Length: 432
Ligand SMILES: [Zn+2]
Image (spheres, rainbow, N blue to C red):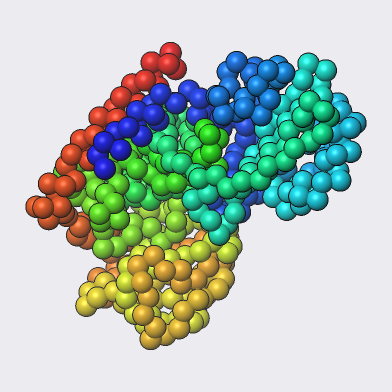
């Protein structure tokens, strides 16, 4: 297990440069998440065949001066695809137009990877589609079409196993977390995970400083070096205001721990709203009134109407309905002492008396009651007395590993932290 991990990381380190080049194709679809218009922004890239791996060249090894990669887009046609690949080939166009599976792929599989082999005359000699099936997490489907010497097209369909590799990336904060992760082609799902992992120690809406740094090792699942699906964060380091925080994934516990074996998770979440591109952007313009919570008796989070609101801890719903000024309100009793309140909701998903889990969505942001715009008003009462809700998560207990778990975790953490520091310095060196 450790050796496998180390092997993967070294591959990740070596592939760092190519991984960036790879993702430059465009924002790839990430798993089963909706793949919105970002796919439309993707550009096709043309690479010299010498740079290709053996597997990519095996369609037509000798006669291929060029290989072009792209991804299918919404509303794709044979014509638009060939144009983007810079192919001028009426015969191939006709062949593809009449190919039922190609038509289906262009209609139904936006985001499919396309690799084209093109001869010096701009004619197509091979075309391969690779796409994910939502029901099969570990494999991708491939359709390969290759032009034979006799002018006939040969086709092969196959299932190929997705293999994981670790991508190691680092970046520096200039304006926001998403600006920094975008600059490194890091998917949003990974940026959000990092913000959640460190949420108890860093408020990513307010605490970031210019020149804060991060290094992230995360899993990508791909076929022959082409990234198809983003996996999870394996380890991350974040240096915020000069303080370095680390988190390492520990499979045995299904959670993240720092180098000393302390969980990054607490009994209570530090925020009733998941950090996201939308909430982060809004919070910048619509600043939470955290410094004045005593007067205000709560914290306001600006976010668009409909943004999910989650319970910060497990408990029981003691109020779900309307209150003057507060509009639609949910109140949750977490234990003998702590009760939280969520106000101005546009929708309520829970009923009085119901039990809720930590992180369960209980409603959606709105502007009901006396609200000047859509936002969440969030309060904490401890034994009936208002307290700063931002302190609750910090005060609540962190999960720690037992002695035997710690013995198992320590070597993993050591390897991961070494990889992170190596990745961090590589990136810094190459950036200068
Ligand atoms: Zn408020």
